[in-house]
Length: 381
Image 1: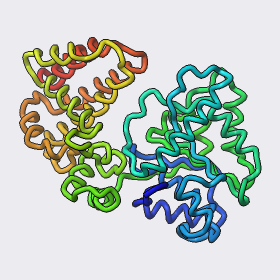
Image 2: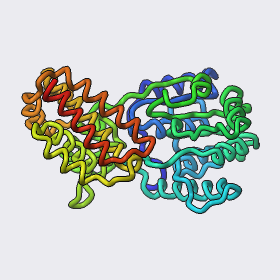
Image 3: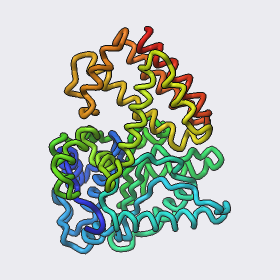
Image 4: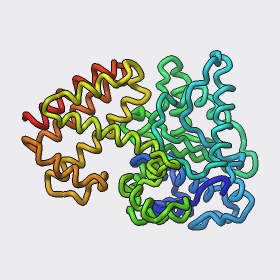
């Protein structure tokens, strides 16, 4: 397989988008939002392929015409896909735009070569002003092949604020509000609340939901050539998110990158449930004193999922736990809780610590403080 993977699920939403396009009522600026890894960008590219298809309007891209084949290979000159990138090292201000375009071209080739890519933490990547300026220049030009141009901006909540260049920000807002004729702009976001309100107000929101676990597992088994039992396990842990499920799959004899993070988070919860506090000190000292934004926050995000599972098990709703393979341990842990209501307070404590990671706090000190607070909320409340 080279190019785009098959589009999976979201049938009702895709049908509604196709019907709006066929009737001429599809808005020019759209926001697809929902949990990470559920296929938002793939649906956006599907919609772009539909709009560029020579047989448009139909309910599905034909897949056989030249535009459809070019989109499938990520080679159509009128479909432009932007996404967060790390800031290129050593690139001067006047060279940044070219460096980012080179990085984007390299990433597009990587996505052609590996269509089924796990949805992993993005880290220090962002959508920079130079990328917005590139998008605006392309938007101002005429289409290369037909009469339409499609822009897909993935993970748009990582658009770097443009306080230093209000003209560019205003131009982007103007483009979203009044795109040139035949132009469709599709943004995707896992957390739409992080988008600038002025941008969000100019978009038609369409919410996508995770796939049923059985459907996600079947896709992994067929398209990803994954053993059915492993596919079902990964799909359940990922809550129906194919992109995240790919990150949980083992890499040879090693756990997948998301599974490593999941186990780190479980170790944090185990330390919080240690009444002596000794395990918490051990884990805190093992943390690097730097790099809070690079990896520490990823483990904290996973910790919130473990806490939600702990709360669900304590409330007798074990069937909704994502970490289903750890149910016996979660059931024993739930017996330690002094008051199940403390789980909600513990989740708030983790979320507050995640916010602090944005200012590069010391992970050692943050871990020690957080585990003390979690122990208090879970065991002493």
